[in-house]
Length: 361
Image 1 (cartoon, helix red, strand yellow):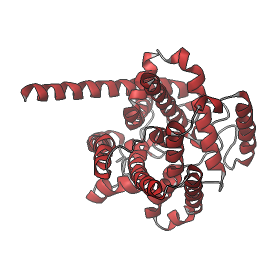
Image 2: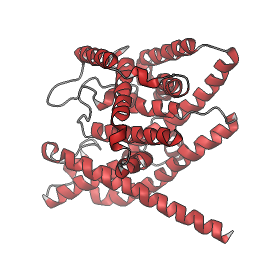
Image 3: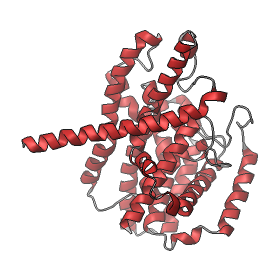
Image 4: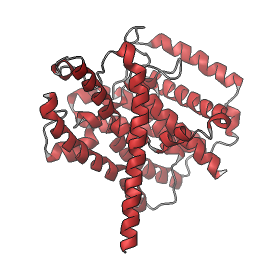
């Protein structure tokens, strides 16, 4: 049973990161469920599924610092060096001015201090949300609060976070609060789903599928940003606390998560032995950290081969890529493969270094 749980979680993580990468390339892997309507909250949901109360508070903080923050700041240091190296070639410094504030504090405020690791804003945000969730969960346990009561409080906090969006324009310091309040609902939902909900298979049936599809089709009527040419619709940008509607982000978060769970449950017997999918799930951190580097390498290579000045790229967003009508899926496949094996290589080197240190001891 433990192996099945671990395999399903791993495949769900693989699906989540695939949705993230496809979203950054502006196409949708799951019809009707566009990436920016649920991609990040799915990761919070998975974190909730893996939540464990067995640690003391200090032990839990130590565990999360080791698994989330230390790799983050190692990546930040590496990408700061890479940014300095490529600046003369591309004619632009990809990030904010270097300072202790920007490199040590901004990761917890915006996470966009360096362009190439901008997708990793999620990591410090997840750390903050999990620590707060741990404390609130302990409080609720002491109060013996029911699951319905907990859900009601977390839902209220998520809706309050949406209403706080105007405060971000006045001070960016509100951004981590908005992210945290919104994400707590999905961490709790993942925790509840995995540890409290019995007979989970009962929530995956034709009636509920029909309900979800009808609801999702109605939610599409609320689009504020969708055009068939240049939008994928139903998006909310949690990275910047940008919500177009007071309730739709919550609903699309849940419909997207439900559909993701359904996909894994239905397909599990067919994909459980797909080794590369498992490698993707085991390397989501490295894929998140490195895919923009791969995308930009492809972009600048294309510009160089076509004799197009690099300044064309420098005046556009970091996510801009070359000839999207033709190259989108090449970026996607190359990005997934290269970043997955970057992760595998880094883990191999780490294990080799640890083994060497252990042998010397």
